[in-house]
Length: 115
Image (cartoon, rainbow, N blue to C red; front, side):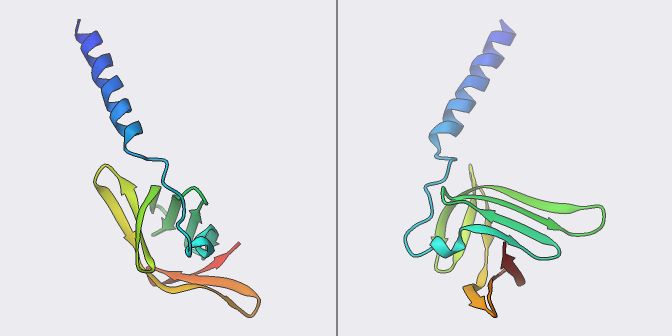
């Protein structure tokens, strides 16, 4: 009987998560320039048209920080990524722009280049 309760609880959790819109709602009009894969020597930031973010920052030789999830919303130039109340705000200080034939954007103080 305990196993049935655990399975039922797991099923309810999965249903709740799937109803929270974890797929992202897509990139809003005017923010399409954010879409793409952005890199620096320490960071990889992938933003999909569907509004999903995959971020990894190598903080040292043996450790890294990752954030993966849907964009919840944009606040000005910044975007908030997360789900279920666990969110990370990415601060964009230089919007995507072309410089000497290279597309760049500055996020959280790090200049990234679009691949």
